[in-house]
Length: 80
Image (tube, rainbow, N blue to C red; front, side, top):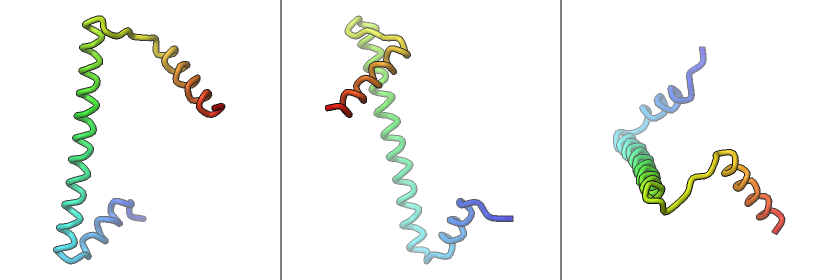
């Protein structure tokens, strides 16, 4: 039976010197914190947009229309 990539990485990491394992652990933890910061930023933006919508400062459009507009913008950029 073959190991999963995660198991291979774990086995290799455990072969490292303790100082290198500590550095690796720190880098992995920082990467998780960055993900949390990105998620927090998206949540903040979604809340800001929702509040603007509730105040009548912006309008909502249908999902299909939003996709059509995005595709049109992409096509126009390719042509330009």
